[in-house]
Length: 246
Image 1 (cartoon, rainbow, N blue to C red):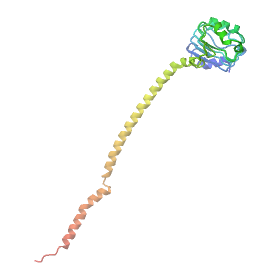
Image 2: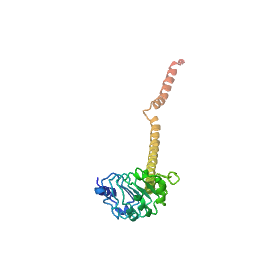
Image 3: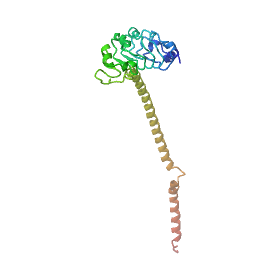
Image 4: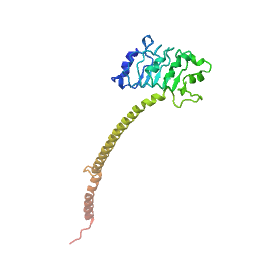
């Protein structure tokens, strides 16, 4: 799928200014450039274009609020000076798996004063002697390089997930609120059903009691037959008494 069409699908009836996160991974870019993305995405904070065949970021629009940019697994070999102009507030940049061979290629990133984390995994530049030490000297604003700080301590949050989780917090809160409301409705319905079942049980219990004393009941018939038996017995006894002559 072309990048332009993918952006159209990702909008999902939203306007560009409503979008804070945009994932365009694995779609096709024509001539190795970013397409379909405009400065109308003024609220965009996270952009991912992993494995889309990019060779340049020259077409990147002005995105003042962009904080995290994923450019891994492309064919970018230079032209990074555009980032300071187009994304001045960038804090996380992933260039892993690109054709970056020397330190001079990433030198323009010095102008990204807020850049906190940079990833260059699987780039030739990582094979240079004293690579980490030299990158930290070149970019003193960095806190993490390839997920570790100057003292080789790992970043507390995964660079690939931490920021995205932060963007999703509000959406998760909304989902939880909706879930709580739905759960309350279900609970109320269950309470009503239990009350109705209880009333049905009371009614059926009364009917059962009435049934035990119905006219057709054997017990009632037996009870009614007792006086009849007594009457017959009295007649028999009377017949056995000797008659007294006059």
